[in-house]
Amino acid sequence: MNDEPRESCGLFGIFGDPEAVQKTYFGLYSLQHRGQESAGIASSNGEFIQCYSGMGTVGRVFRSGSGLLENLANPMAIGHVRYSTAGSSIPINNQPLLSEYSHGQVAVAHNGNLVNAALLRDEYEAYGSIFKSTSDTEIIIHLLAKPTHLANFDPLAHVLNHLQGAYCLLFLFADRIEAARDPYGIRPLCIGRTEKGAYIVASETCGLDAVAAEFVREVEPGEIVTLDKNGLSSRFFVSPGSVTPAHCIFEHIYFAKQNSTIFGENVHEFRKKLGRRLAIEHPADADTVIPVPDSGTSAAIGYAQQSKLPFEMGLVRSHYVGRTFISPDQKLRELDVKLKLAVVKEAVRGKRIVVVDDSIVRGTTTRGKIRELRAAGAKEIHMRVSCPPLRFPCFYGVDFPTKEELLANNRNLEQIREFLEVDSIGYMSLDGLLSCAAMLKDNYCTACWTGEYRIPVDVAVNKFTMEHYQTRMFDDIE
Ligand code: SF4
Image (tube, rainbow, N blue to C red; front, side, top):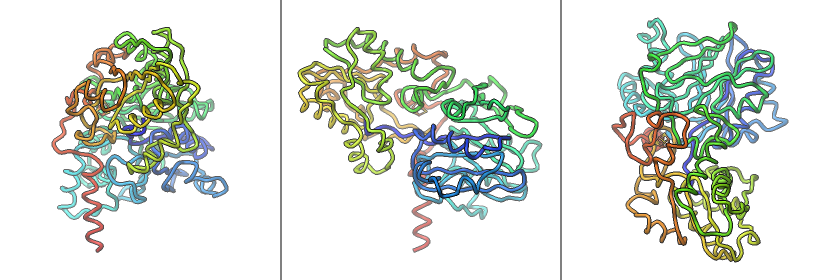
């Protein structure tokens, strides 16, 4: 519900289209669910890169009549929407990050989290490097600019081998776009092509749909694809197949848009499968099934189909408020959710209802909604959740609260049921979840349920790790 985990970012890039900037704008619009704190576009005319970014949603930053898109108009562009997972929600951390180094200009856009960011930054600062942001992305530019790295046969591939963690990256150089995905393929990244043959890279296929482009394929884990005047070319910075992927299965459960296909599978279909499996694992003696929209809707449809119960919209979401994590502050998020999810009294009054949600994080606002459903006259409330209880934080680009704040931390099922004030509770099993996925179970990251992190994390790397640098920056100013 409102205490949803928050995604880090969405990426979109396009080469060789006279309307590249306009299309980037539409692509980012469709990826807005991946981040609403800031938006930015960098474009190049082949010789010179321009960049503009601002705080807020895409529509707000590039508001109509501002002339910003017209000023940026160029045949190649990359864009970014952001939710901060490493580095604070402040303008200096907006992306794309545009910099100039000995080989010219480069703009970088990043989705994910580097687990060795603090270590690398300390190392560079010790040798005198100056950072202008508190985001982990800036470190990549420093790595790229280092003379010993530039002397390498393939500097970008060399640099990527220094990074640890989750990353999908877009680099806009004056004459080309390079897109890279980490060797574990944690976050999704796909390639598309417009009718006129311009190549696109986007976090999700919904970005391709938004500009009527066709899906070509996913960027492979450990792959760099280059979009330039010769079309599309590919190379690998780790041997293909040498690393077992760890795709974030939470993308399928919650983050990605229903009309997207990620990790080889449509998100809506996947969630319906989860719902059907959930109904088998945790049936309920009830009158109707209601979803927590929007991310719980597909699973609720599956649950209703499997259990042969009617599907009802007992909660409706206002789409004019933006996603609940529009504000990183808990108090504002709670207000947000009140505005956002309203109870349809007529749909729940006097009924025994099954409420299907995709996940429960802190649980406090879920409980608030349960109370509202009860006040609206629901006779019994049976909570069903289409993933297992979240018990561990994510270090790979999702802003979960601390372990202590997670509802399922140190609570058994009965204690969770009591906390939420529901008549029964049922969580999807991990085996059940993985049985719904298209790939072998080893191909997914499940660390937020198991605590088994495929990429070792030495220190707790989250947005607050990088905020240490921000505090220091501001202390220094004082
Ligand atoms: S820990 Fe959870 S949210 Fe983070 S990458 Fe793994 S599956 Fe995704």
